[in-house]
Amino acid sequence: MTLNREDYLLVIWEYIESFDKVSEKELATRLGISPPTAHEYLIKLSEDGLVDKDGKKISFTSAGRNAALKLVRMHRISEVFAYRFLEISWEDTHAAVMELEHIFSGDRGEKLFKNLGYPDSCPHGNPTDPDIKIREVPLSIAPEGKYQIKRIVFEDRGLLRELASIDAIPGTQVQVIRGDDLRIENQNGELKIPYNITMSLRLYK
Ligand SMILES: [Zn+2]
Image 1 (cartoon, rainbow, N blue to C red):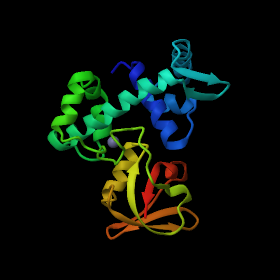
Image 2: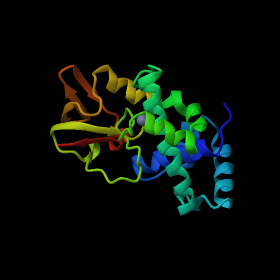
Image 3: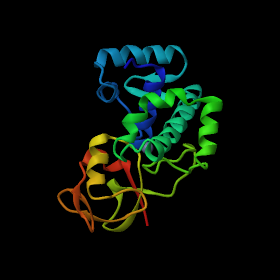
Image 4: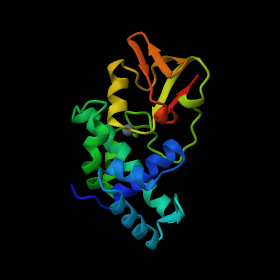
């Protein structure tokens, strides 16, 4: 698969929304490319006025943010389609639509959205209106207690697979346990969530 600008913008969005920041190294790892390639592409995105690079800090310009917003929206709508109609598993939909979402854009995308019944969110709970404000607490700072899972912002296949193994999907209840590590528990079992991704698991009371 050849990577294009859309793939870069989508991953930058995903990191910033999940963790408030993104590095060249993370971008490279997530896209399966070398750090120098990521570096070069970021320079190109910045020359095109889509990304601001201030030393190591990478952020969107407003033009970049607007472009990413449309892609993220189509990604999430395409996931609903793949999950409901192609019977792709909950943990695999993110990866499965990486190609599909490029086909659904503009008018086609809006028709798909309408025919899906205007879904509020993707199967992982992320809103199809990516700009909407959400009441939620990241697992990283959630005190011990009972919560519902709101969404998984960083749609990492490994994390999704683990969550799926105990059916910890959006709308289900979990108990947060804080000890030497951060764990969530439900009637099906218990999971230790690696600290570096606890910020991307969002809960609500
Ligand atoms: Zn999703």
